[in-house]
Length: 89
Image (cartoon, rainbow, N blue to C red; front, side, top):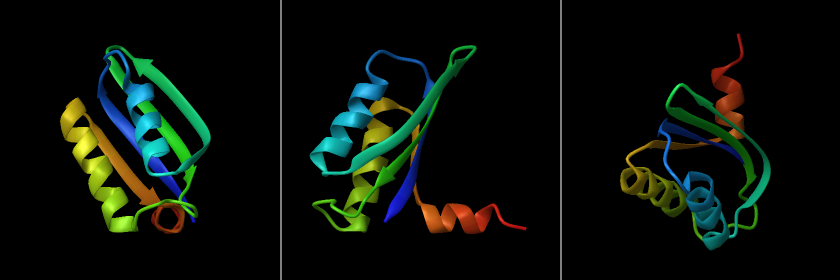
């Protein structure tokens, strides 16, 4: 199952490393990533594969919510089919 992880917040050192480490901890494969800094705001979108995750989806989502709080950033995990449905007319 594919998902989209978005990260938004004030730019700080180690954001990509922390999100990547959390993906590794949960055995989530990062398939694509794009990031940019707009003024002082860090923005990142990752396409990930959850099919081999070592935790159920609710635990994965809770871990990314916790990571967002730790980093004082918005970190959102959305399954690709939900993301696609939200953006269809």
